[in-house]
Length: 301
Image (cartoon, rainbow, N blue to C red; front, side):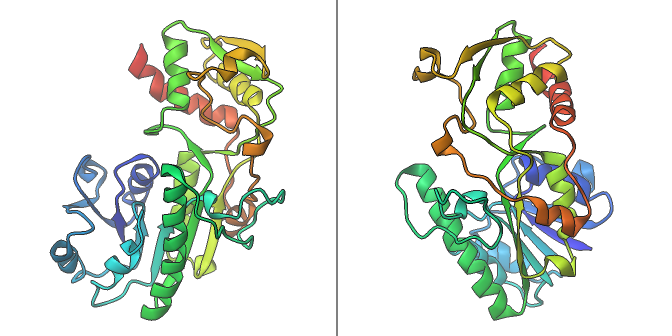
């Protein structure tokens, strides 16, 4: 396939590009922070909002566009309007946060999307993704392009720029104990980034993925289960200090709690559809954390 990747130099986009370029003709367009040429991708340095640059890219032919960095209303329409010959499929990397919150239900791809606009930076991020979900459907229908929305929950693994599991590795490698809340009611559903990238690649060009949405969400765990798996993945190098979730240490302003801690912060997502569609599955958490440890520990030792 001829795949145009928009973004593709960070985390999921980077891992996806590495996998896709091994067997496909991949062109990456981004601002050039990190080159992907060493992995076999053609790289075009441009900002997606540069209309002249995107007009030139629109002269090219692609089977699939995979958009990792659409963050504001108009980003998807601004790309497709530049193409003379439309791609078959447009894949938009959205977020699982677009679903209506606090329903108490396990959220499937058919669950209602949020209609409220929340405040703050995160609230605005979600609102723009919601606008882009609507824009994806409307624009693709207008130009006769099939659409696919991919909604990740929590991803972990190499190249993660969010300081979550990498911070745990840093603490372990520098001889610090990791505070572990026992009895925390929050749950989260981590997915190893290479698994997510492989599933995303499998959706490219697949008729089963056309005009559809997919959650990326693994098995639900709490802090204790996650950190116990992390200790095993580190071959015992990581040391936990387990304290009750009610301990004052977890109420401190500098408490490191990168995942949902409270029951009220928890949403459950059904991640089965993408597994059925692609025929792929998630690796066990401990195995994914072991691979993550092997990469990040080199930075701190």
